[in-house]
Image (cartoon, rainbow, N blue to C red; front, side):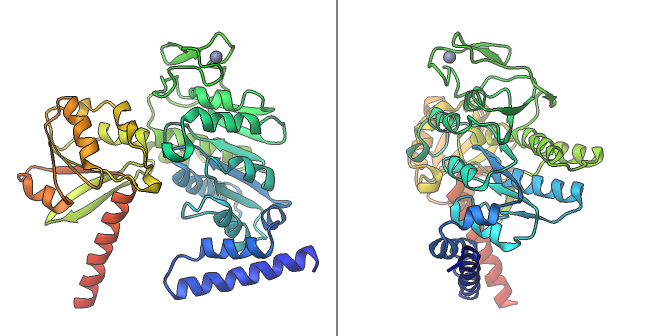
Length: 397
Ligand SMILES: [Zn+2]
């Protein structure tokens, strides 16, 4: 069978599997489509990537949002249709499904899992890679941050791609130390919570006013682009996405740029729980817990923690976070690992209780406002429950 006939057959079979998956309501059909394509044609990724202009987005926080933003900016700024992975499917199966869906689109923006990035980089030959910040995440799977940074450092030693990085992150500076083309964006410098020691030589890093230096030579470098100082993570990621779109040839109107960086979408959703309206923030890893805790304004707080695979089985990161924002508030912990977080908070002198569910937590509070922060699967459980409630309402109507 010729190379292109095998790919066509793989794509057709993948399409049928995707259709069946959607019909049977077992999934959105992307992952199953990708898996079938790869079984029939293991070389499908590189075949489908040939002669296309591809951008990869990777890093710990904000991959899905940044990928969506970048695809939108690129489409607007080039007036061309852009293929992109819309639902965060960021491993081989999801990536091949995205590439196969509209193979004539020149531009493709792909979200990529941190550990898969080297493989996907070698398969798709991207023009640009946007590296978002690295911080501790899913410790049982990825290990310490320096493990991912070291993997990237071994990978990016050619000059066939342009890497766009936040120059204030020492792990990224280490990751690109041998790379040929790097565009550094600075946000005025800021101390990285996981980088007390040098990612390159493990010596204590010398931090001064948000810039760092090590005797091995690793240190804050001159940046080509200046973002604003004190921006939130999502705003910083939006600026990196804009730089990537420009590099791909897009014209980005200033108004659009301002809007994107001033109002970046965040992962907050309002749920109706036991008759109360509760603004709930998704926190997938220590850095997003830090951001989530800083944003809390209500006097009564629910923290929901699970430690299923995708949340990260290892909860030792709870001890790396400062919970000062919670002092003086009433906190109730729920979820499968509620005791882990409740004990951690009690050590910091925070008034804390536990409950078996969100609803039970709500029943223990008075009528002042309540806000919540939930780990990934705890947040998904809330969405499922909410959808369940809406579906039931739909039936009774
Ligand atoms: Zn060093």
